[in-house]
Image (cartoon, rainbow, N blue to C red; front, side):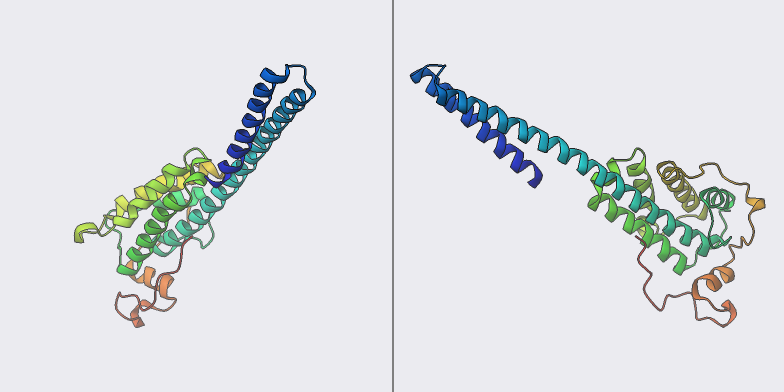
Length: 230
């Protein structure tokens, strides 16, 4: 809104100058030197204002495109971490592997509370991004839809009932596909049987999250806050 004030003021000034020239032309004649000067000044101001407004629009659009890619990459890395804790797989993977893991997730896969908290945090941060970076999301086709889908995880415990594992996987898969399209990453899922180290058991999730053997860990309760996602 503030960026519109200066061009608007410039156009008003230009209009006043041209109007003054019109008034003076009625009194002193259209060929008077002062009239010509005012007309030229008014049109010059108008041209400068329009040029500045167009250049500013292009710069703003580029900033939104860059910001959109930044939040898309951040969200994708956050999903990568969540999927790794939940399902396992290689620590650093491409989008086709993430999609393959999610597509292979079973409805009976465990969702302990620390994994739920990661998913809840991802959904909350996605919802915040929808409010705080709307212009950046709108700059890329499909990016708004990706964050709208991911923000559904904000209600993973709505009404005391936890989403089923298959529902969670579908939400994440849709988000990853949209993000991959924006970031020019692979959008086709790799067959799950080709991906190593996948283990969605609760013990394996505890080991990946807490970094110690699940048999010697504390109960399924977080002792520290979940990390910021993006």
